[in-house]
Length: 215
Image (cartoon, rainbow, N blue to C red):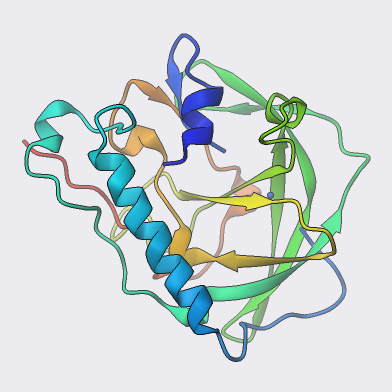
């Protein structure tokens, strides 16, 4: 889980982190470079290290005893895709529900259009009203999603991707970086609920799998 969410929503109930579209159809990157694959591997290693850090981990103490890393799908280069971003500057902020009574104010920053297995998909991507006022995360975008692996191989509530606002109109979506909300590990966290518009009707076999807590 990202430090962003720890810093942002650690008020009252602890919360966990947090997003577009165009005419051009973009398929998976034809030749995914070794650097992108290596970056995905490094991301997962860093995520594991943060879960081992007592100051950062969301894990309960009983789950940290024998923890040696999260369970991931094998790195899947086919799930590193280019998405076209169509900004929607006129959208108004709304209150996104979370797993607790807390709400988080977001706006649809734009729409992301991309292709997987020859099929085109669109997902809204979100910008936090609170984060956009900060220097460090003013360009942060939040892409939550559900897919057909949820409740089986992956967390039933869906997963998240962290993105940054690009200079142009393209964003690389690396689903190998998909991670679980903190509430998948610890119920004290308050996590944004994935909107229905962010469902992908296919199996995303990349990123973090479901977590099996110790009895």
